[in-house]
Amino acid sequence: MYTSFLYQHAPVLVQNIMLSVRALIRKLIREKHGNAKLLQQITAHSYNEQAINSFAAEQLQHTLANAAEKVPFYQKLNINMELGITDFPFIDKAMLKAQKEQFFSHDSNGVIVKGETSGTTGQALSIPQNLNSVLREQAFVSRYLTWAGFKKGDKRAWLRGDMVVPVATKSAPFWRYSYFENMILLSSFHLTVQSMPLYLHAMHEFGVDIIQAYPSSIVALAKYLQSTDAYYPGELKSIVTSSESLSKEHKALIEERFKCVVFDWYGLFERVAAIGSCEHGRYHIFTDYAYVELLPAGNMIDGRERAEIVGTNFNNSLYPLIRYKTGDYVVISHETSCPCGSSFPIVEQIEGRIGDYLIGEDGQKIAILNHISKGVKGVLACQFYQQQKEKIEIRVVVEPNVFDEQQKAILIHNTHERVGYSIEVQVNEVPQLEQTKAGKIRQAICTYKEHK
Image (cartoon, rainbow, N blue to C red; front, top):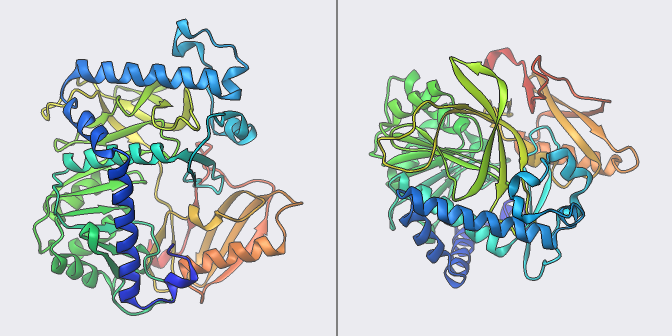
């Protein structure tokens, strides 16, 4: 909706109304389809290990049976269901990209919602969902917000990667309102040193109780407060972060400057795992959300074992993924119980997605760049380079017969929408992208020294 011509050219008041109506429609759909019943069930058993295990076992069996009966990839394997999940092979993103139609369930009636994984190097993966999957996901997110202290009627701030304000806008307000959600939505694309006091004032004036944010965005505000020896002027219940990795140092800085606890959520669009920190800072694997296996990685960190997250989704019967290797890792904890009282198992830390960024035309950091390549045909992978403020190079690995001048123009246009139109954008085709010493591919490489 944010990039539609109607929204971008509408007056601010009309944009607020559009956001509010969309929120109301979503609320009515959730209520109609019994979202509250699932939320009540998973909330009730959060502190009962036996109830959690019983629920998870039932969900796992349903997922395995559905896959074996209705999904071509698994049908061909002739799985012996009596042997359970260990009889299923491991899969990964490369397999899904190569055989994506083979994981699509025959039972595909009703509304299909299309979405994509984060695709931090441009290798986004399309994952279809049915309406039930979307609603189940919302139930788990709602439960996590209750962990963070959220109650009906509380006011929230949303500071994530949504382009709620067109990038060409150069004057405040850099935020919009969703009245039915009691929410102020702030643009992360206009978060400059000059605008940061305005953001803090807008949230305080609105009376925010909880902030939901990308780590890179809320860390930027925390660093600004630190640089001015100031603290957030209001009283917050909590801050909920997600979609990027959050270091212990940055978590501590946010908590110090905003005077509240940070609740950090790890999840994937594949819906194969969810992990969240509690009020005591421990990370819990939500075993009623998905079946998670921790595959030993063969090395240690500070005397603790490192393991890859391998997950099986419970919440997407349209596209069930079993034993999916995420490529993300956790450090195993020695703790078996938590002061919060939750029965969910604990991990020491998560090694997930690092928030690379570019510098926008007004000096703002632009993180989460995966949306730029969405909708561009023929792009297999892309990486952004910025050595000077006024120029960005996009290196792309492409399908030559698909990626043409029209697709290149779309890629450049999408980039301008996020970093600003005064920046020169150049696209260069390459055989492969630059990797780190660890063999990983960064989303963006910014060497613009003034902003380091």
